[in-house]
Image 1: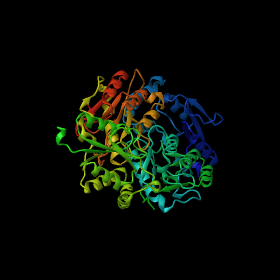
Image 2: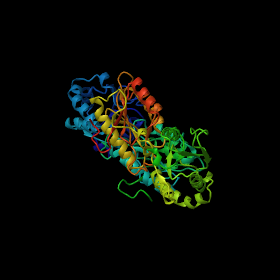
Image 3: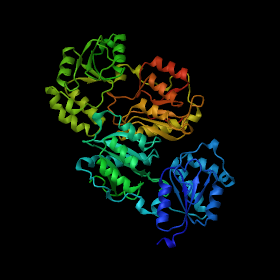
Image 4: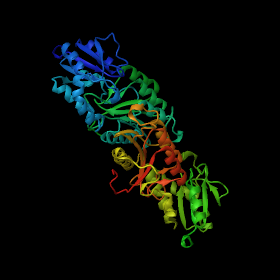
Length: 286
Length: 286
């Protein structure tokens, strides 16, 4: 299986995804090499084969990948917009900087697409995390033992609708809906922060332990470069959803990364929240 | 002028608007009567002529308005969605409750429109705050001495665009945009909370004192019952915008309430932020 898959360069940002990918490669005997982006790759341990390179040293990244024989590249993990003034680009980085800045003006997604294009032009094949291992993404239907009830249908439908519109405007990926009311929309603060503020809203417009109501919905943006950047959930998401009194999480099948799947299922079952995958083109309300 | 205007019933929710309306009535010698909604009318002092009535005692509200000879009614101030289980409706309240619950399922605006309809059917004329005194709303152009720069044009345009789409989905009224990036969207947490979290975002994606960037944009929802519920700003909004490092506030001419206008202008001038009114159908970007 993995014998015919080229060595993978994992360009690692923050969070646990790069490590998860490295573990999947190791488990399937696929060779890999990790480029830790300096200041971002907070969880990619140095014991993994690889090296640390600055985010604007594009030439150095490409040379390292070539030297390692990596024909495929997966960009994985979270990278915040860097402070342009603090960037230290190398020569190759300098040549793409004007294009990157111009693309960034059109939003995060345009920037991502631009960077993917730069690597493709240099002959690298770009793989998304779910190309590397589709077991990393949300499957169809409920993931644990908790199943959404009929009472959750409206919120599931509305949550996905709002998340998709928010995405189509390049605002963000997530929304929280309870009894048809949109309690929160995620922009730059991140899902955990959105869940935390939801837990502080008046008790009468949200659910609680013992009477869970509403959902967290996360969808990729329609123009999102899905090979780089998918909505992600992990144990902390499940815990935040539980603390906010929500009934569950809904995402699109194959279009949401699930970090540490076993732990996510265990937390969801223990806390009594559902984690549901619906097909992107299917009817979400059932 | 006010001689031919009927006595005004001010149905008072939370915040300073009911008091501002009462003061405008008094200044223009228009008779008025304040219905303080129990538990909500936190700032309508009891020295104003009026009485306190529960939010679901619709019959009692109408009788009081009729007994006082109020042919016109203005709903003013903030009312959170009440806990249905805790409501104590009177007989008239009971008759409209099923309709109100059904309307509420379609969002806050549908509920507002339903309640307006109930009062209109009973012969009351509904006035918006800007019908009572158009000096209460945002005028065209900048309000204080600070003028937006060309660098703010993109954010003004994008902020209004996002706020309008958010509104068209009945999510909320406000958004914060800095250098084209949507930092925050307001749902149920309110503008002040949104500004506070904006101030905690990483420094490199937002402005600061001395290098103010970006705008807070607030627009009414397209289907909003504008006679009841307009976006509102006050001194705390200006202070929150300043603390978040934003350059200014933009709203639609005649469609944003400005509480305590003199103090708002003084705060904006002192803190160096603009407060801009653009025509709802005009080009916002200039």
